[in-house]
Length: 78
Image (cartoon, rainbow, N blue to C red; front, side, top):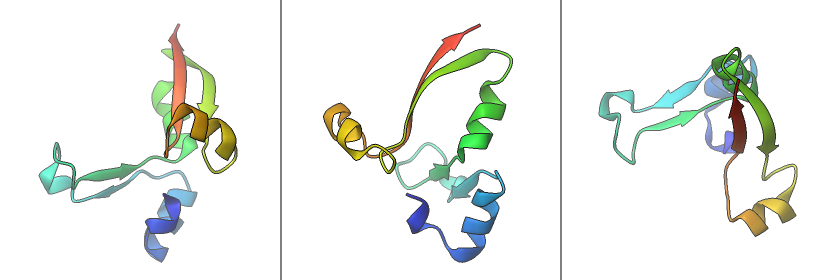
């Protein structure tokens, strides 16, 4: 959903920063967090190994079969 971000937000996202919309209403469906892959890797590093990263833009056929519209990760605890 990177295309939904404003130009300033795209810049932050592209350098690895998490972009959060409406953090003041965290826990509702209106609050959104956009996590770049590098931020996911950083958060998981040391405790988890990423086994699979499903990117629907890079692999639309697999994403359609898996019925996901956003990135999905399969991880293993170390």
